[in-house]
Amino acid sequence: MPETISSSIANFRPELALALTFIAAMIMEFAARGKGRLTGAVVLAGFAVALALMPFSPAGPERIFSGMIALDPFSVFFKYFVIVTGIVIVLFSFQSQELRRDAPRIGEYFCFIAALTFGMTLMAGAANLLMIYIAIELVGISSYILAGFTKSVRRSSEAALKYVLYGAVSSGLMLYGMSLIFGLMGSLDLVRIHDVLARGHAITTGWSFATMMIGVVLILAGLGYKISAVPFHFWTPDVYEGAPITITAFLAVASKAAGFAVLIRFFTVMFFDMYTTANVRASFSGVNWNLVLAVLSVATMTVGNFIAVWQDNLKRMLAYSSIAHAGYLLMGVVVSSDSGIAAVLLYFIMYFFMNLGAFYVVMAVADKIGSEHIDDYRGFGKRAPTVGVGFAIFLISLTGLPPTGGFVGKLILFSAVVDSPFLWLAVVAVLNTVVSLYYYARVLRNMYLREPLDGDISPIRFRPAVVVTVVLFIIPNILFGLYFEPLVKWTQASVAMLLPGA
Image 1: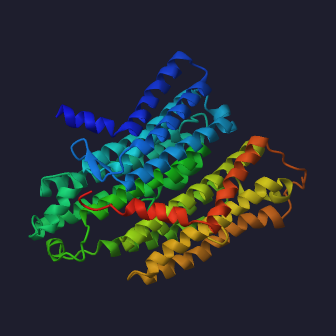
Image 2 (image 1 turned 60 degrees about the vertical axis):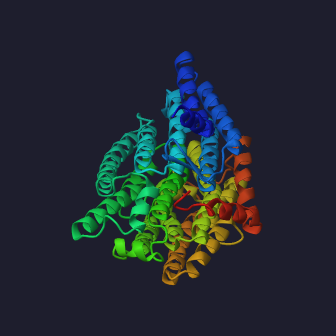
Image 3 (image 1 turned 180 degrees about the vertical axis):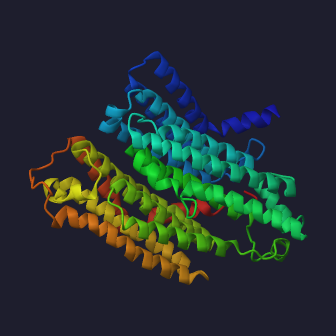
């Protein structure tokens, strides 16, 4: 046992670095109270160390800590994604006037950013139902605190309260579902559960079938909450609007990615070869989980896009946009092939640049004019040309129009669906994209075709750091719309070993 634990720890270095970063940040906060930026610098340095250790983490496939955590290219991809997003969010936080104004104990904020990032890296590799629950709870508790961190702002406190209530219900549902599956299968390990299903055992009677169905549906409800899938999305718009913009961006990108990592591993490992292995089909009476996820995908993208049309607050609009994008991403899970899952990973790369770029502009403008209302963006494109062009590119990329990375992400994702038996799902997605064009174009119309309500057409000047950051996000949005082959190869390699035995 000692040898196993020591070897597991040796392969756990990036996560260990994040855990130590959290501890070091707390020590710094106690030692240098009132100097929160020093705590932020410690967290940033810790994230850089964790990122530097990633190439030395084995790509597997293998499992550590008695099979609780999987090491494979799939988990490595999401760990890179989460850590890089964490670094970006810390840098955004250094520039946020909202945090300086409304978050007096900013050092604690950075401590919870470290804890949240650590939890999401655990979600990326969780291969056991208990580990999944522990990781999600770590992420959830940190998220609740961060969502309400600007507690002097009423909408922030309201967002945190709603987040806690929804999170508690979803955690309870998921934990009860896990207990049902454990009672039926005698194991919490995803691979062992798959083996039981493949042998055709345990689900041979009506009660066993009903128990398994209820367990999986309850877990799906918990995971649907994490990715903001309909009908588990009700917390998203209120929390995204009330939380500090930096946390909204973190939840919209990294937390959603971690949720999808768990969802993909859960369905791919547990029900792998569900429809080609006769024993598995017989053991679960041919339940078509792909169709269930397809219905979830349609509901998510449709509800997200249509309700976004009516929003006047940009953070709230981007929240419903995020729900719609979760629906698009679910299509890759529906396909349940290497090409479909690789398309999800590629889409997340594009989503990283376009969504973080959009939220950054919203943060910068809110810091400057004190508003997130769409009508207050009238004439913005003329008054701040560089930032305005950047925001326009991010919105065009979110829509999925060429020549942006968002177009490439949707093209490859839709292509994977077209090559599957779910062609109708791609048709629904295209129609939803047309709807999304309307509310994104509404912002562009205000920026370039309408005059400010107060008649003020004087230039809006941003600090050089803001302009440089916007340009740095513009470049990959355009570059990856034109040249994306290395990203395709990386994502394909990341799913090549996502197998039950991995």
